[in-house]
Every structure is written in C-alpha cells, then in structure tokens.
Image (cartoon, rainbow, N blue to C red; front, side, top):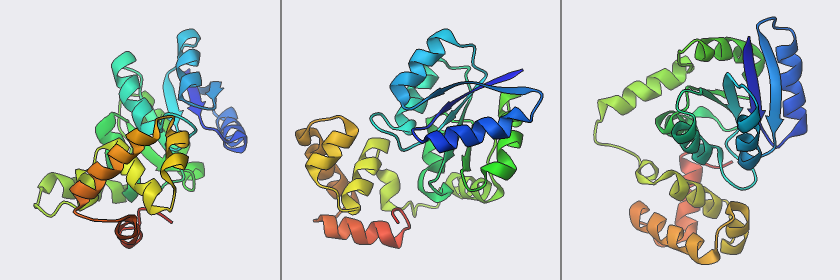
Length: 210
C-alpha cells in the first residue's frame, strides 16, 4: 500500500486529492497538514510512503521543507504539487531533492501515475520540464540572473517584485524586517539592479510573477 501524506493549506485541495486517491486500491491518504511544522509532527507518528507538498504556504516554504526532509528522512520521496508553473520552481525543487513536480492543473491526469512512479523509486517530470533540465545541463553560459539567487533570495525577490513591503514579507516568512532587507540587498546586487521597479519589470518579463 502506498501511504500518502499531503501538505497544503487549502482544504479543498486536500479533499480533492483524497477523492482522487480513494478510487485507487493500492493508495491511501493517511494524513494531511496545513504547513511544514504540522508535516514533521505527522511524520513522527505515521508510516508515510510519499509526501505531496505545496510550495507556497504560511511560514516555511515547500522548497525549504524539501531540504529539511532530505536531511531528516533521506529515503522519503517528495512530489511537489503546486499551482506554480514549472518554469518558476521546478528546477529548484528537483535540485533541492524532490522526486517529481506537477501542477494542480494537471493533477487529475498525472497525479496517480506520478505517485506510483515515485513510490517505486523513480522520478516524475513532464516532457517540457525534461527539456528544461536538459538545457540546464548543457551549461551554455547564458544562465538568467534569477537563477543565480538562492531559494530564499528568489522567494524574497518575487515578493518584492509583486509589490510587497518589507514588513509584509517579514511577517509572511516569519523573519525580521532587517533580515528581509538584507536579502533584498543581496538580490539587487546579484541581479545588478537598483530598485524594486527593476525587479518587477524583470519578473514580469520572465514570467516569475502573475
């Protein structure tokens, strides 16, 4: 039996996944969590085969959670299930240690197949993402500026680009305003930019924000 644990702060998504898996004789949704802290509490008491993990949640992000899971539960596979399109986070998620990445829009068609493949020790990516990964491996020397950012810097960059204030970002990420501003300084330096306006323009041009 493939025991599935889902981590998503939207109740409707959790219910939808439960309904999808209920028709599969070899799968069971044995637990759910609203955030990363709850995820680790659940893992202490449940025998989980695979974790379905969203990226954007209150507190710690899904990308941070993947890294922590790799340290604490190195053999536990993680499938990223998110609204974010592949070009924004998929490569980062896989590099962090995720075994697969699918969007919630394609979940109806791909979810069961992805779970079976990953639970069996494989990886799951779409054909488009496979091409993107192949391109990354070619290392042509034309890496986009945002790919030079760490995962947290990338997260902060997107929030500033979306018009968020330092205080709002600090509250969302559960860090101090000074920490947020330090990240902002690093981002501007790495991106070779001077203002949030430039960040916003870049993010829109590269499809990093809506």
